[in-house]
Image 1 (cartoon, rainbow, N blue to C red):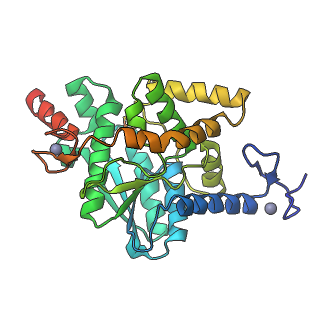
Image 2 (image 1 turned 90 degrees about the vertical axis):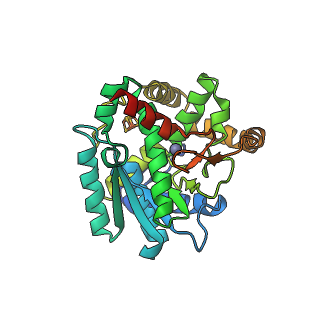
Image 3 (image 1 turned 120 degrees about the vertical axis):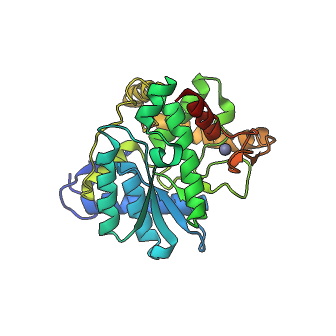
Length: 304
Ligand code: SF4
Ligand SMILES: [Zn+2]
Ligand SMILES: [Zn+2]
């Protein structure tokens, strides 16, 4: 059956709907849904300056692409990329990020673990023998927040999609870390701190499949290389389980996220008491005397 609106050959089915649409209608549907997410959740104000965390993958490129349309003023939009130093991986995705920013006239700033923490992630794993994602996530969040703020951003946008959120919700459930879920949602964080840049997720209600289709139809040169450290992670395990549940019961991921959003205000209330102070070592926001990034830096100094 042709696309109902345009009467031409459809290219994709809208998830959880029998509707099949053409390329133009899908791109319009996608943009409309992202704009709605931003509007309903008040993600971006008129005076906000947005830093986009850009990896060069399909999610962050799609997020930046839409924000370029929504915020045409390039003084209010720029990108930050983090080079963790992962052999055979990050250099490839950074190439795509640079190309996109050049073509779309977006300022891109790149910061590396090597320069900021004296070691690449590959070196850190060799020294500390820890779960790579644990230290990588702490350092990335730290740098994105710090650099976005120093560069004048008032919000930090990331390319997290509905599948990512669903995985985080279920991982926290399975591990009994429900307190961590209080930080999730289209806008992250529980307690405000002047040095915390609020994180926003414009692609919050878009599935991974939809984002993949958007990136493909827009012709982004996305390299689908995966991080070599991602294979045996708990997240990857949950990813497989959720996909199999979704296949048997279409709509499962949406249901998980929708149910979660109903209890999110209660979770934020329940876990808000933990005050955020400043790290004694680097002055960045921290829940403890020394922030987690500085804890890792200190262990690295002793071990190297
Ligand atoms: S998969 Fe883990 S190690 Fe690789 S970039 Fe993501 S957080 Fe870092
Ligand atoms: Zn159409
Ligand atoms: Zn610190």
